[in-house]
Length: 172
Image (cartoon, rainbow, N blue to C red; front, side, top):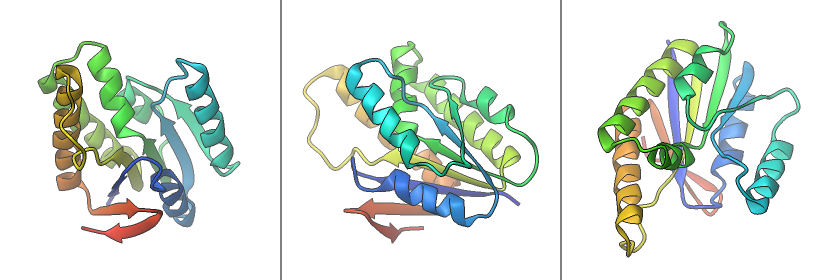
């Protein structure tokens, strides 16, 4: 039986570090699927820092769009998969022109693939619904889509943890 954990919280709340701690405690080989793209100097710097924070035994797979393919390419057996992060994945899909319905479909396929492939899957996402209403249509679409995707993922998850100022608060 596979286990799926959703780790959510605000920006810089400690989500990735917490996900890595859970993964390392699993005792299984850890695969880290990173969805960020180094499109500018700042993102290159952030990605480099993220890579340095991972255990040396962790295998990083960089894939911004084709998550199901990346998950299915992982080896069979007792593995733990971290997906970091769902928020950037959604942004990537929006920028590729996918409709909301297509995004939801991709999320459902990704969850199914993770359940099938890994003993433990950890999905990192941002909680974006506590802020102000964005001023432009694209930002509002992203915020609304992110909230709905988080709801879909949380419903499917066995456990959900909210990180607040680096402190994990179990909510499911």
